[in-house]
Length: 595
Image (tube, rainbow, N blue to C red; front, side, top):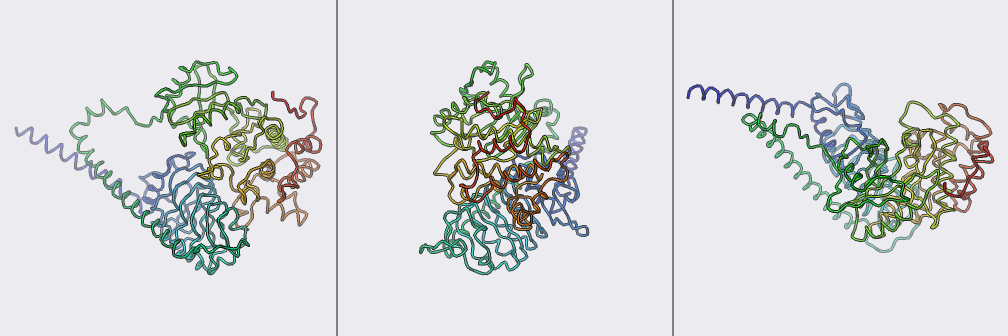
């Protein structure tokens, strides 16, 4: 009996020590680090940029995208743009009360802008453009008296523009364009200083700044205030709930440690090797495979068996339409699998009809759609896998630079693919989202236009889904932002922006442009006025030919004209590229017939 009692006491002491260890580990990092870990927890997917944010570090100052004050070790800069971050913005960001710069633009964040950001009294710059943020603009942002830049454009924000933003006396750059904002634009304080470009693309806005007379709708006064207050209260309730869940999770973790003291060996043998990380596709419950052209030489059973093995380790891309997985078959053939979640009851019939059309389109410069899997919760589109990745990655993420010939060849290939969609498809297709991440490259750096037609497939007038998914800030034609109606010349403008991106090696909304209140088209227009347009070229690009450069710049300038009527057709663009920019080979003339 005495031996059993000693054994029990020893076991209990071990439990206490383990409990203290877990507690100390939870509290090891600084409060700013804890806030950033909450931010990371709310991120459901990314390109891996947050993998090295370690909870065991004493502070987050060496984490990627984080900058601290060297003396106080407080976080002053959180900058993680263009990293495919998807999820909601954690209210814990409001705990970073020494933060000066918040740059999370051009990701896939959704949900509300946390009202708790109003607690970050030192904030000078906020860049949240190019996401899928919704709900209203928090009036609490009007408390950020040090704020100089606020860019929340190209999101899905709704409601009124808060009057309190007018009291931000230091505000120099303000952009809420391409959202779903409504009502009269306040004339209070600094808001009167901003021109139409700050508000374009919000069809419900009116006021002096946009030269639209307002009807007597009550304006952004009490309605805005009450709406914002309701939003704030809702956010606080969500935050309190998250705190309760967090506390419960901590207590649960400690109890689990105690339980493992008694049953650890048993539990490990039974469950230890089940890491719970499998994200297998939901293809149960009657999933079926539809193949186009008969060129997917596998049985439905074989494909579904492979789909069931896919998890987060197989993700190779993520965008507005969904995640993309690498699908390797047993015979060595590799495909890309795009997963699109179903949206409504009529989704199946509409989607399948349109996919039949896309499945019939084959062309050398378009990504080949092989077939699709109809699962209970999603559509799984099966494409050819292209080992060269995206043009976006080739231009902006790799150390090895594309030379002049490679860039011209990519531009020409993209132009031919787009020209085929515009002029030779039946029915003709408007892409609506031409950008570098939608131009894929094969092993020889040949271009393939991807995601063509998906914007039309996902069109939903009631939810404005067309505007949400079709188009990326920086590539959008001005008339498209104003009307929401896409035409062939809308694609031509986006193609012109793409050419400038390839030439310059800079994204359309590069930070160097934003600081000057410009995008890449504005920069080009400025250089043209000073006859310095050749300066747009990436200095790292080798083998540039002056005649080709001048001809290509001329085409790009025509494509990004503010007037759609002045832009050439894509068929004409291909003719100009072949006759004036590249030296055509006998076997490489534009062929309007699919290959």
